Length: 330
Image (cartoon, rainbow, N blue to C red; front, side, top):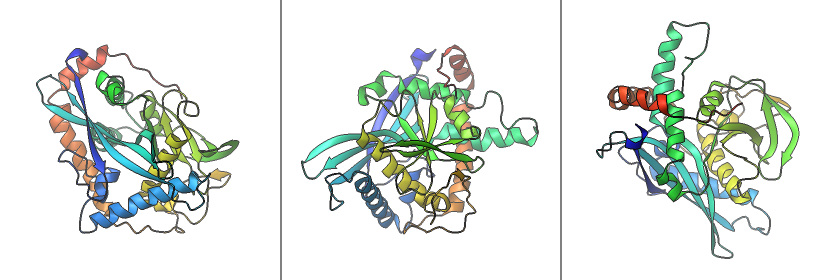
């Protein structure tokens, strides 16, 4: 059954002139900024923040803090279930490229970074709330995230994906507000201070079904640890520039969307529980509607149910039953 699934990779540049594609999730980090009357100013400020953060971390032989700049491509991966040319926008990620303005060289940045998925919206905005209405014993269905995890692993191991990218994605997200994190003695020269947590979050478990493990690091001068989801070896498989690009890209988005955590005016301590109620934080100069963003996630989940899950339910179930996955053991 899996032979019928075809994958296609598309790119669009994320810059101050960026306009979201018709099939882009409007809640995704990059698309949400490119809406309304402040769209160009939002995009310009976001890219400036990314470049400043990159240069602050890549400070060796960079006395003026302006040696490097980042270019971002939005990577859209589509799946054709029946092989008839009707594609579904499965996920969107980011791929960065770094320019060294001293040597005029270009270097690969990270593939992954942000993670946008309609099926994930469906799972968290439709499946999970419905399940929790009648269940108090467990916090999620036993098979929660199974289909999404299999589709993700099918995609990143497809010929179409491997033709574009030589490494597996690293996805960088916020830590969970429902968990407590503990600072360790482990300090990485790029990623910073490592944290562990008391137990894995629902998101950690969800990404484990995608074959991804997780480690938490608070970069130098960062307010809070970031969650890095990866397959393979996070510390050995990626260059310093790739790691710095992931930090500078995703910490910027987190400062915009979760300023209570990532733009807090104090840094995470030895024992840390993130909170969106934390009062001492600074706002960026980027304007967006937080309430609308939450409402759109529900609409997108229901749209996915009607346009992907229900029409292909039998095909997907049969394919998933025969697809072997790599479950990352947390």
